[in-house]
Length: 88
Length: 88
Image (cartoon, rainbow over all chains, first blue to last red; front, side, top):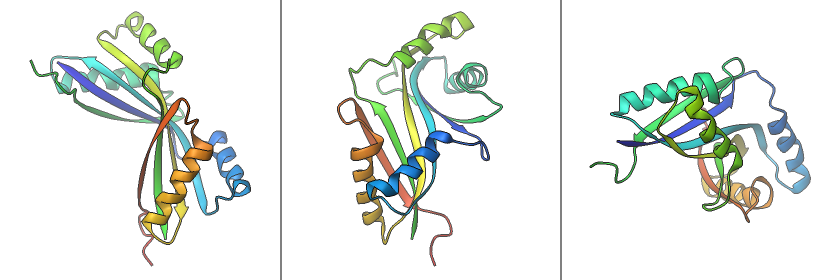
């Protein structure tokens, strides 16, 4: 069965986010006021073939810890759902 | 009122995603099979001060088009909700 996976990778609380800080600093000059706390993360989407949702989630959790994130400075959040039209 | 905003910036369909392709190519060597269609996007979170949700959404939409995305190659999806504890 095919599952659609969405992994959000974001910097942990307290870890400096220079990309977000740069966006935040630039906005007032462009006329956007009142924006604060900008944090930039990654959103990785893919499909994974697995026997059931639990197996898909286990594979993705492992994948996140070993490859997609740096657990020292990053947190991840995983969403797994059956891909449309994957029931056969 | 303070609103929590989440902007997903992703490459449009059909635009090459070298970062996603690299992840996809590397996975079988690490023992992860059955992963396909990897696409890497950005997820930008911030808070914005606005009179109501419509105003917040309008500001963020403008911000996206002018600053956060390159509309030629990127799509964006915006989620706005009242920040916790912002009702006063």
